[in-house]
Amino acid sequence: MTKATLVPNKKNNIDLVLQPLKDQSPLTEVSIHELIEASEYTSLYVDNGNIKNAIAELNSVLKPLQQGQPGREITYQILERRDAQISIDIEKGEMSASAEISTALGGKHLTAKAILTAAQKAGVIKGFSKEELVKLAQHAAQEPPGSIVKGVIAYGKDPINGNDAKIKHLVQSAQDRILRPKERDDGSVDMRDLGDIICVKIGDPLARKIPLTEGIQGFTVTGTPLEPSPGDDCNLQAGDGTALSPKNEDVLVSTRVGLPRIIDNGMEVDEVYKIKNVDVSTGHIDFEGSVIIEGDVCEGMKVTARGDITVGGFVESSYLESGGDITIGSGIIGKKQDVEDIKVTDIIMSANLKAKGSIFAKYCQYADIACKNFRIENQLMHTIINVDERVWVGTEEKANGKLIAGHITAGLSIHAGTVGATAGSATIITFAKKLENFDDQINALDAKIEHESKQVNELKDASNKLRKLPKDKVNPEMLNKVVSTYKHHADQMGKLLSEKELLEEEVNRYMGSVCVEATERIYQNVQMIVGDFQEKTKREYGPSKMRYKERKIIIDPIVS
Image (cartoon, rainbow, N blue to C red):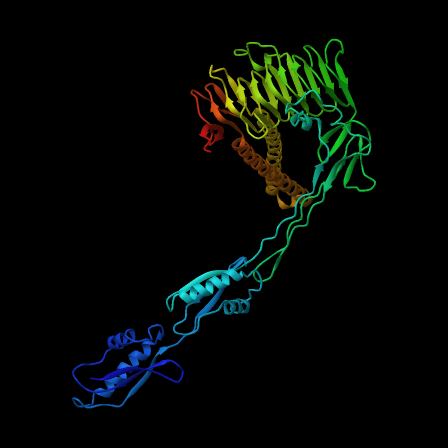
């Protein structure tokens, strides 16, 4: 039988040495593979081509021999020690680089340094993770010979955009003071003690501009820098009674003694009118600055102020109008009346409050409210409300108060613990105001589109008539002017149609964003109206959100 042996050669690879002997037991490729499997060289690369060549040559040598006659020795290298191989892939955006390793076949494993060197040769120069390099090298060394091992070895870094400039207020406003009253030694608070804490003196710093930041540069794994976007800037606004500090133009200081009031990107200092109560003995209040009322505003009284109005006690069946915020330490109380079957436009409440800013109170009932944002801490009952943005019934941290009956027109959302009443009193919530504004804009665009369409049609007819005239009767200048004017109006109509399409998309986004949210319960007879779509609850729900979706009002459970 032909003898087959595996013998190391000078290259530290393995030769197959055949000593031919003709007999009835031919040597095959399968026999050679069995020999390799039984050897210590199973981790080496197998050259199947040379195995085929060795068997072919063996058969050629044996063919002319007689039975039992030996032939010449045949030697082929069939096993080769191969070092681990590596390829580097840089992803399309150059924000990461990966290594693909074909593990060693009896040769050398790749070290973390070798992987790093290969990556650098491929153009990866930044963002390496030493931990990932070491982990990948160790992983590849532990896998079976010839396995494919992949791993990310370098990461780009996204730029960090700069922060916008912002205004930091350095003093409390009257509303801050009401919402966060100072505690007495025994832990109680005196809502009527507004004192001098909310007043500023001449030269007191009021606000500071925190400058924008430029951001932090990022990079790709190939070293390409990625530039950040700097933050947006803003200007510190000096309102009435304030000025930029001569020592630092990023600081706003007071130029009068008075009440600080927050405005967009700055502050104002209002002259302050301070009074204990507003009643028949004081008469109505009409003041250009801010008004602080330590006690109550009694029935039938009026308080009008260009600045904020701060009330330490109650507002009872009276009229308040503010150019800023209205902050009430206790409640708003109007006279009870049956409003179930009366049109909202026909209802006149005895308590009427209007503010360009926000209104805050502990509770409110039978009142007419108009403001930007409205927050009631405990209970809101039978009130007509018109807010540009949001109604919040509850603590500052959580909407956990009660909203019972009433008619609310909101711009963004309604939040409360419970919405509606067990008795089923009507609670009507509509988002009509902003949609009416959208309708006005769309109607104005439709009128413009109709005008441009009429112009386009008339000019098109004129152009066609001119083109049909005999050439000797056509005025080229007139034709060019008509065509040019036609194109102008056609372009205008196209722009208006695009503008209308964008506006309609904005309307759809707005309708999908408004909601009524109850963190505890929604009772029956709560009606939500969004444009032409409405829904009235017919039963009680747990924590839920009412919202518009796909041309209907739906009620989704809130899952905590």
